[in-house]
Length: 168
Image (cartoon, rainbow, N blue to C red; front, top):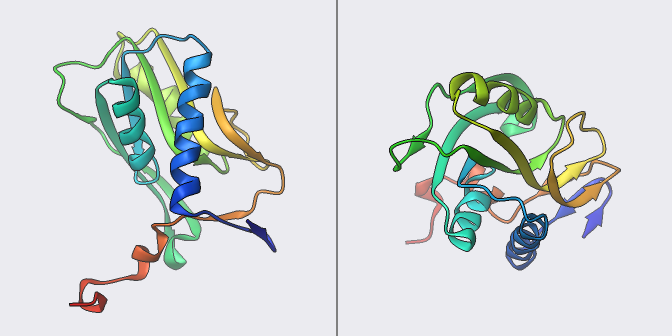
């Protein structure tokens, strides 16, 4: 539901978007052998796609939305290493995140990965939402949001919840 520049997503809608993304990637007939999810926003997306496609998952941590409760972009920090259980990264990787907002994060990662992992032959990107303000165009996406609303995802309430606030 879009309301005054805000898009509110339920858990049901969130999971359905991930399923739709899987179908879009599958319909492309592109063969890949590894998924890299961008943490934190891409963790859930990457986990579900890894299960659906039965592909190994690697995690790359980034941080940029750090100020004012995560609503203002700061300097982009990208982890030096991938976290993964396989011995090496595959030759064709699908990099997933929840959304492409400005496009800065996915642009940097798509440029940086082949420099770090010289065996890479193909890197493609997939997101649930592509915002109209983005300068980066992912290879796969589910929803194009020309008005670039702020997306409220179902897990965001944990950003401001601390353990002492949980019911016991």
